[in-house]
Image (cartoon, rainbow, N blue to C red; front, side, top):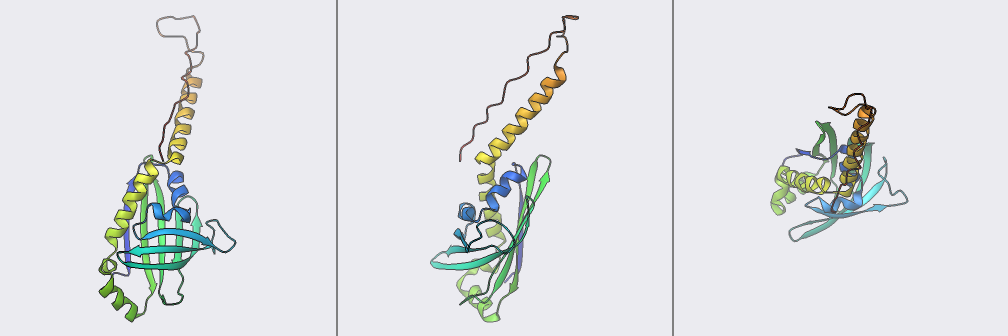
Amino acid sequence: MKRTCSAETVIDAPAEAIWAVVCDVTRVGEWSGECRGCSWVGGVRAPIPGARFRGANRRSWLRWTRLSEIITVNEPVQLNWRTIPSGPYPDSVEWQIDLAPENGSTRVRESFTVLTMPRLMEWLLWAVVPAHRDRTHDLESDLKRLKNLAEHSRVTALFLGTLNNAAFAALAAGRRGRPRAGRPGRGRADRAPGPVRVEAHL
């Protein structure tokens, strides 16, 4: 059984838009193949170190929940958390998502490392949940769903729309006061482009 796995992809969206999805644990079910939903536990309901949340998981006919705790938050480039040993689950797995801006897009890496797992539990997982022998494919599928979600999110559209409008405003300011080509000496400024309309669908 592989005790560490990782996968990465490039998403055509700014890191801030992707961060808005991954840091909200209540949205994990939108892009994770195994975790179908999470909810905050306790009084803290924000992605800060020490905050806890519980995830509801499903794999084929199996159903289970796990309590997790956030370890590191470095907005908007890294989120790190671990499952907490409790009850029938004595293991602990550390998960991490890294975001790195790259040529206008963002390279996203999802990874995990098994910190502790009794041999008996490892053997049971090997026998009962074959997909857990190597979860690289699971992580690749997670990132495909995250890519689709982030590239079509309202946050991404608003962010890019803001950049486009800012770029047009800068262009207009640079051209303001220049005479039009072919009409020297008139001193008429070109009309500044209007705002860009950006449409998005959740």
